Length: 111
Image (cartoon, rainbow, N blue to C red):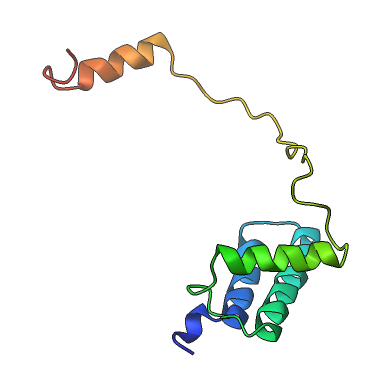
């Protein structure tokens, strides 16, 4: 083990806390962590590295292939619909605000 902080077990514990502090729904946390746990078990079973700094694209692709062979996930080439994103209007500066900002800039920057 190179760095215990980078081992999957530590990463999963820290990731759970991160998801919770970011306000992710319990359903999201409940879905992500077991799936990542399956990934960790797969890495161990295949004698692949379990340190997150040593896991590469080929390890991830092998895991996806494994899942597809189990018919656990749909083919990754299938079209996915984008997630629903609630519309949140952005505050826009008024003309007066922009003029005030430009007046506050040094003359060399406002040209």
